[in-house]
Every structure is written in C-alpha cells, then in structure tokens.
Image (cartoon, rainbow, N blue to C red; front, side):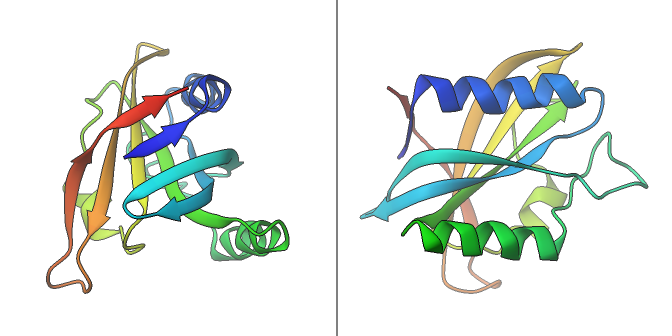
Length: 143
C-alpha cells in the first residue's frame, strides 16, 4: 500500500500537467514498513531524456544520488518514483518495467490527458532479482 497526503498527491499530478506533453518524473521519500510505503515528500526531478521525452523519462544518476543523500540526512528513504504518461493510460509499459530496479518501491504513474491529470495508479516492484521481478497493483491511500 502507498500512503500519501492530499498535498503530495496533488503535487505530483500538477507536475505531470506542467510538463505536458512530455513525461515528468520524481522521487518519493518517506518510510517503508511491512509492505506499506508512506510518503512524506515528493521531489521533482528533471527528465533528462531528450530523444523521446514525450514517452520516456530518465532521472540523471547525479540527481538521484543527491536526492538520496538529502533523504538520508533527514532519516528518510526512497520509497518510490513517479512519472506521467501524456495521453496514455496510467499503466506501466514494457520500458517502465525494464527500467525498474528498486525492489520494494512504489512506481506511481499519472495519466495526463490533453494536459489534465486523470487517473493515478501505483505499482509495487516485488521480487529479489531481475529474473523474478514483477509489478503488483498497489492500493493508494490519500490522507
């Protein structure tokens, strides 16, 4: 289960609207406990994909390391990632799956239809290796 405040939920959806027709992306910080990822902050990241930013995203490794260090300084963990799907469903793609490597993290996708955030879904990356990883539909609780 993914738990986040209404403010954070709205923030990541607005981020998707602001980058439309390109994908937005960001990192979710918080605490993970027994399959429950509780988000206390959403950190917007730059999409470094210049070849196909309308349907792909990439967070620069240096930016991800910076975000991870800042989280650790605050005793927080990376509990997930988010991105948008401009004019596509809020469902993971084969590329999303291939590029997902943070086991136990939530992967949140917001469909942005014609510039407006529509459905937001979350998927938990389970498994212990690339060979047995899978995405499971994850319940989202907005407080």
